[in-house]
Length: 370
Ligand code: SAH
Ligand code: SF4
Image 1 (cartoon, rainbow, N blue to C red):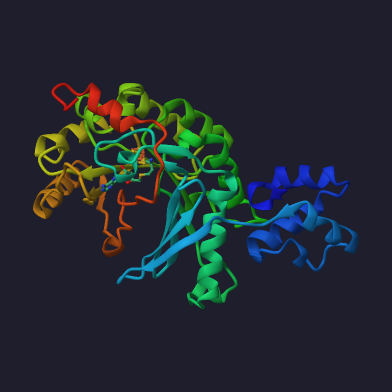
Image 2: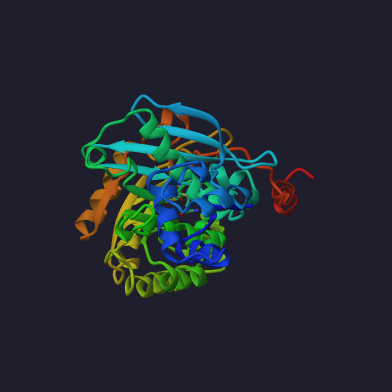
């Protein structure tokens, strides 16, 4: 059985070529699946009868099963989605006046183990399939339409979700092939038809994969920086030991040659007493001199067992001012959905850790209990 949510335009064309069908069938089916959002392969009423009769034995349309559906006081809505074997991932809808944004997950857990991240602390189970990634957007649009939400663009016939950010659970560039296939579905005019500028991939900086993304499917880019020097970033974002700042920033510059936007967004989580001092802001301003960028300061969102605290508001504002004075467009991220644990870095889902990292970590830390 083929899940049609697993296939981008090329995949659908190959699937229908294998059935002896013309390429236009692929485009027709993509519109049924991603625009009319059907879940029944037998419902495509303008397909030739012979094909319509054959299809249900060969293909399904199915996203991950919804385990829970919670709406926060500010309208932010979080779905917990079962992806099998005891794993569940989260997708978050963030309504705004002029857009509807969906934050989606790319992996069950994450192997990169950033010190301040709830997903990272849970370990890693597996990559999501393309159908599980695309299925988050397919499901959100269906659920929001079924609830009758209104917005000017929905009245004009567009889907509720206008922007996608890959900032949920997982490191998207560590699941490269499935993520790129999903990105192609997001931007395909016969599928979701989102502009590349409205699809943002956030990465902690896997440099070779960033170079490959530039060729495969460049979309807007956010990079999780979090520190102005290698010594501190090595501690907070361990992948920095493999791809240090100079290499990462060079890759960002290469990426911008093909990117749909002419800047990178650097994300910087504000950790009390760790990376939020005036000297850090000054160091950051020098570090980023040669990279066209904007900065987004994210107040740290605590989660059970986290070892950090959020910087006091005045310190975050002072940090922002220092960067603004140095000429950088710098925003402070508004926290959304924190009353339902849907804020950045709080997405926990349910992860069956297969890396045994907790045990490894305990044994490798000097002085840790054995
Ligand atoms: N793996 C990717 C995308 C998912 S994380 C990445 O790291 O970029 C999305 C953003 O949330 C990243 O910038 C990440 O550093 C940030 N984040 C993680 N934990 C956080 C927390 N507890 N509070 C605030 N932001 C957090
Ligand atoms: Fe993984 Fe991103 Fe969390 Fe780091 S911040 S552990 S890369 S999800």
